[in-house]
Length: 193
Figure 1 (cartoon, helix red, strand yellow):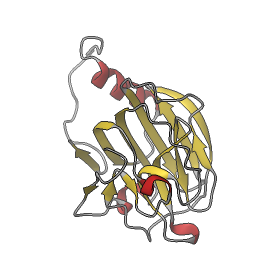
Figure 2 (cartoon, helix red, strand yellow; figure 1 turned 180 degrees about the vertical axis):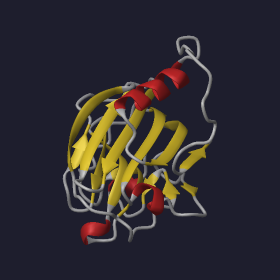
Figure 3 (cartoon, helix red, strand yellow; figure 1 turned 30 degrees about the vertical axis):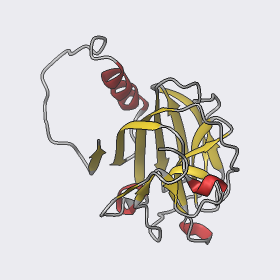
C-alpha cells in the first residue's frame, strides 16, 4: 500500500465478523512510515469506517509509529512500542463488544490494553483494506506491505496469538506435540492472501 491510492475492496463486509461480539484482526506489516494522523475519525487505518456517532470502527490505526484499534466514540487503544522500523512485525488486535476491552499484541506479546466503546458495531461498511474509508489525513491510506491478514470472530487468547506468531514467524521453532484434533475452525475465519 503506497499511502495514496492502493486499496483492496472486499465484496462482502467484515462488519458481521469484527463488529459483533468478540473479534480478532491480525496481520504482518512492514513499514517505516510514521504518519501523525491523530486518533479521531480522520486517522489513517488499515481498515476502518466512520459513519458518525457510535457506528465507527478502526482496525490497525497507525499514528506516530504505533498501531491500535478504536471503536465508536471510545478511546483509541494504541501499542506502547512503535512498529515502524521497516522490519516485519506481527500485529493482533482483539475486542470484546460486551465491555469494549481492546488488546494490542505486537510480535506475539501483549503490548497494551484498555477500554474503547462497548457494544456491537453494525452500521459501518468495513469493505476496504488499506484505508480508513473516511480518513482525512493522508486520505486515510496506510503505507506499508501487509501479509497474512486475518479477521476472526471471537477475541483470541494470548496463547493463541503467540502460537500464530510463532507458527508464521518461523516454522522451524514451532513444535508439534500431538495430532490435530480437528481441522475445522471454530467461528468465522476469513483469510486474505
